[in-house]
Length: 203
Length: 203
DNA sequence: TAAGTTTTTGCCCTTCAGTACAATGTATTT
DNA sequence: AAATACATTGTACTGAAGGGCAAAAACTTA
Image (cartoon, rainbow over all chains, first blue to last red; front, side, top):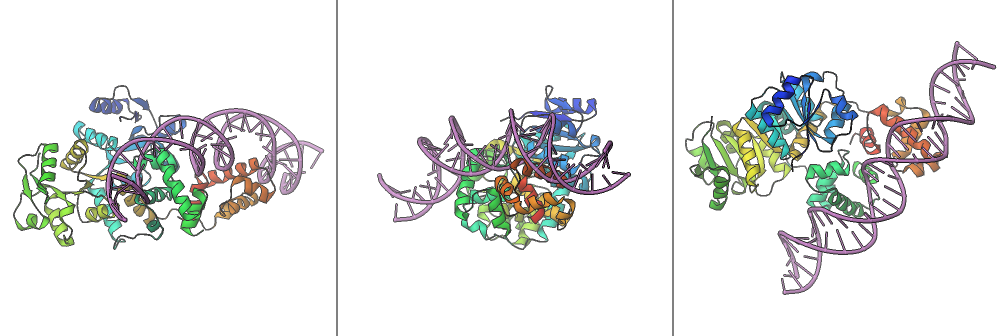
């Protein structure tokens, strides 16, 4: 299950470096994030993105790109704040743009396998913040009526995700997502995802 | 820069599986986390830990182990809550104990390289929590940004109405409802009615 | 009255959501 | 062993959602 790869950087030299390190000579190359959103690229593409060329990328641009592709954010001057920003908005990895070939391959393989890659420093910050407000496992009331997978689908739905995205997220087919949702709708006596959301958020 | 590896599980079969998958026939084997803390192990060792055998591990035990070693938490029944708990306390990875050899190798390589490995689901939860620390726009004054008709459409949308129903309610065509919604989506930077609802209700 | 803005609509197109009908595999219970 | 629940996927269909292009109609302002 190898996904299409897209290299985004204004620097041909950097693109060459990535391509050489990862054996991606035939990967599609673009110069900025806007170009990615403008043209139709295969869903679930793996995007290597040079942050140096995207100083003015809007949050909406980032999120849109991350919804359709797996975005690996690569910075030539990594900073935790920058990394967190991109991860918040959906990137699946954040690393140094000029990482060694080995590390780059590592990151690449990880995201290809559906994982996420971040350095230790960022992970610790994330965990620290998370821990400060998580005494125990808060199992919301609604989840109790649902099976494990159904709850996972609902959880993703509450992020505003589309079926196709949920499918990717849970690594199942879109059809299965629909099956779970149909079941959930029945359990809550609603007709569609919108009414479900209102029911759960108390609209 | 290969670090010593320690396998911790009460199941010899599982230890064999890990050793075979990762080529670690000579790795030190222990049966529980307490044993790790009792004896002197090389600093910075890489620890593969079967969570199934550590139901009663105290938080202090976990943190102590994680201070001296890189702990890869492996669960035979992965759950986000469990994963977050271990990551909070210093683990550098959380995955399925019986992952395929490829994935296991992936995780192993990643932590060897100094990275952290978590599944997509957990990472998203972390980022979501982190992001919520920095509220972007508590949209309580949403109507102010909209025209009168646009606000009316949004109002109906918040009842969970479909476009056709909204059209009947406002006595306009369904096409007009769509036009208003398209405009509203742009103003709020969202893509569809679901995301709009989430933005407005702060779900 | 002329110019500009907002609201309104139609036609057509693509994509997504949801369901009917059907099937396979696994795990648990009886 | 049989029954049951859960998870998974497929094909195919209907209808809703959303947008591109274009253009009337109404309302406001210079």
